[in-house]
Amino acid sequence: MDLGLSGKRVLVTGASKGIGRAIAKTFVDEGATVAVCARNADDLAAAAAERSLGGLSLGGVVHHRPTDLAVEGEPTALVAWAAESMGGLDIVVSNVSAMAGPDWEASTNLDLVRTNELLRAALAHMDDHVDANIVCIGSRAANVAAPRIAAYAAVKAATVSMIKSLSREVARRGIRANVVSPGDIIFPGGTWEQVQRENSKLWDAIVRENPFRRLGTPEEVADLVVFTASPRASFITGANLLVDGGATSGLQL
Image: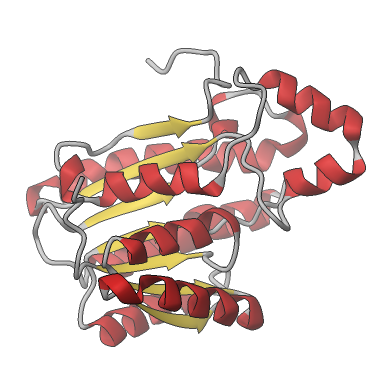
């Protein structure tokens, strides 16, 4: 299926590893021009080089910029740089999180306040068209009790509300906004890889919680994100799309 993303100008945040890295690579594979950011400059440069090489056959191009999005003003500066580098902006994928567990201040600042700054700055550069859209990466944690990471779970739930409201606000411009919420995803350098290596009891428990008896991959999340951002999903907006292998047992009403 041709997703119609060739030549689209895409900004992906938090793209040096894991889900963000897979999302950026998938956009490049679809022929998009992609700008990426992360805090670690070396990891980001390595990821950008990998994606540039992987996307040459389809004309994909990658721009990269080290950025700490927790700092006030940095999201706005990042968007301005991305729009200038690519000659405009069509799609933004917000994949940053403080991942701060119980730290309410850090979680609220990055996942909500600074993310809102990023999205508002991006909207100022987007044309009024259904191909322009926003995808925020949420979490299954927003849908379940999460006592050890209450702040993280709460801001992810608030992210869904924020994007639902934003989707109605920008619909008159023809712009879409959605959330994609991963479940338990394993990748090199991630939390679950560390658990698998160091805590077999917890690892076995997590695997049992997943109906397929395995964890998901970044690529499985990336495929849904890229489809959601494509013209093929032109009537999807204001949604929270779970990609969790059925691990969330409650209904979303």
